[in-house]
Image 1: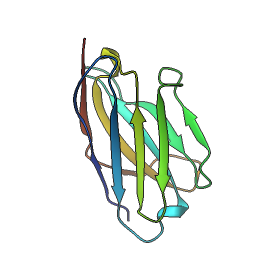
Image 2 (image 1 turned 90 degrees about the vertical axis):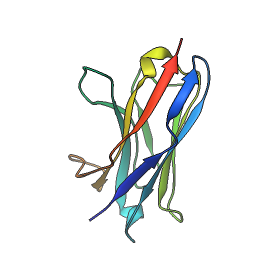
Image 3 (image 1 turned 135 degrees about the vertical axis):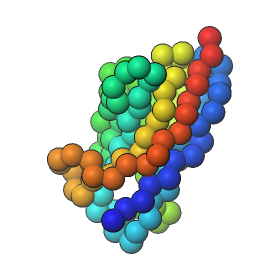
Image 4 (image 1 turned 180 degrees about the vertical axis):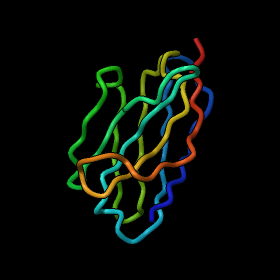
Length: 118
């Protein structure tokens, strides 16, 4: 069982930056594939970025070049650095984990709100 807690959301102007962090419980953090998803008002939850057990990263086209996902196995954390933010990045951001690097994400945090003003 993994518990995930996100932090770092807030209100920022367009063009600004925010860094989200996800703290995970458990002693087997390094064996999990981690990801960030987001859900904008009235829309479905969508993939943002993921990082594999060996730190290979993948990004949605909409955030490529602006967002960076990273993890620290010693601290059991996964971060999302978001630069050049746009109003369309406004959403609740969720951290997710899965055993290994394939399949669905079994564990989810409660989310953190990111609001980008124009």
